[in-house]
Amino acid sequence: MATGRKNGVYSGISAELSASMRTGWADTERRDLTPDPQAPYAAARRSALSACFPGERLVVPSGNLKVRSNDDPYPFRPYSGYVHMTGDRARDGALVLEPRADGGHDAYCYQLPRDSRTDDEFWTGPSAELWMGRRASLAEAERVLGLPCRDVRAAADDLAAVRGVPTRIVRGIDPALESAVDTDAERDAALEEALCDLRAVKDDWEIGELRAAVDATVRGFTDVVGELSRAVATSERWIEGTFFRRARLEGNAVGYGTIAAAGEHATIMHWTDNDGPVRPGDLLLLDAGVEGRTLYTADVTRTLPVSGTFTPVQRQVYDAVHAAQEAGFAAVRPGAAYRDFHEAAQRHLAEQLVAWGFVEGPAERAYELGLQRRFTMAGTGHMLGLDVHDCAQARTEAYVDGVLEPGMVLTVEPGLYFQPDDLTVPEEWRGIGVRIEDDLLVTADGHENLSAGLPRSADEVEAWMARCAG
Image (cartoon, rainbow, N blue to C red; front, side):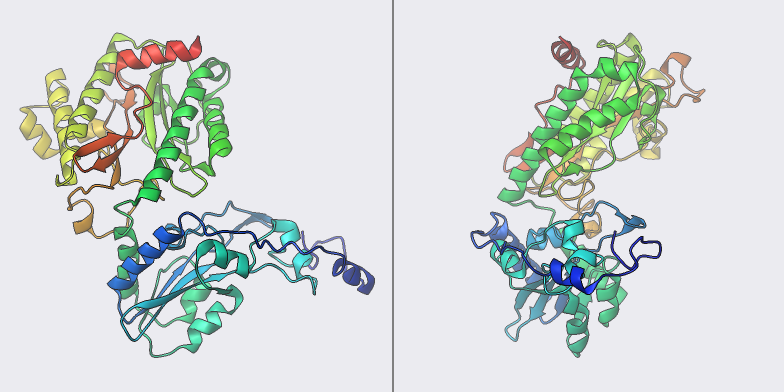
């Protein structure tokens, strides 16, 4: 890619070429930019973070590009805490909150600026714009983000030069910045906890972004159903590719690795190989979400009969999962314990498994012992936002031991999975996996199912598939 590589075909740059490359370029500075709509919301988030750590310097890096194979970088995804606090999605950046005497903070953002055309860096360097694409200038970034911006190439030296100020940094994101500050791992962990805590309740702007991601996801599922016949002729990869096309068309990418699991693959919780056959008579478990261009993601699952109609046993399992999801839905409301929706769904599944004779009862005993977990595997949901499993490092007392508040967004996704080699269930049940997952917004008086655009009951699913196919 750039000159100076070990096996490059060019041995150097002539003076004439260097001079030619430095001249004849138009002024492309954008002076018509306005603040991003997210900017005032990000400012409010920074104020909330500032209040958590008066008198301390806070460093929140965005992360760096990583190379997969020589010149081929992995797709870059910035650290979610940085995105939430700035609205920025650039690599090699960092947010710094510098403490003031009044207990507040001054915020500024380090950015990788545009390459100068006065040397050869812009077309030969490791991050050369002619190779990687145009970046925002510092002035452009300031106008969009509403933050003072500085050259990130000076960040490590700037941070190291300031001594005697208590500092916290989010670890594991940017090694160079991490080595420039003298911090304590336990105190640093509290910064990441706070960043996650502050993402739990979404503001109006975030809720709008999540709605858009879910709506695009609904269209992606509809695309898949319309192309199921082509998947039967190929493999699960057709399903994965069909959904990915929608994700790239309407968003940034997929929010996580798509699970396109047909047949017995549906019993594997995180099946992402997506290389198996799609057979008539089998179920397809599709767990997928569009990540919008602002990086908020949906997370939806539907289990679909490939032939368009459930078999009696498939419907029996599906109806049980649907009823469990209904029980979970009923427990999602402000003031309820976070665990309530999980426990409601799991209790229902335990009762059903006892009724079928697959778990020894009574049902309350089975639930208390967790015996249903042989067939349910996972919890019933999680927070959703910038990460598919959002707020993962939040304080336990603020998450799983906390209470639901308006503005929280979470998934409700019970499932039953009968492994193909499980001899404790009848043969016709083996290899059946069913999960139904929706994205719920906690409202002032209950909840709203953001993914209600997709059918949930068995009858609705069959009717929807018939319409899409026809």
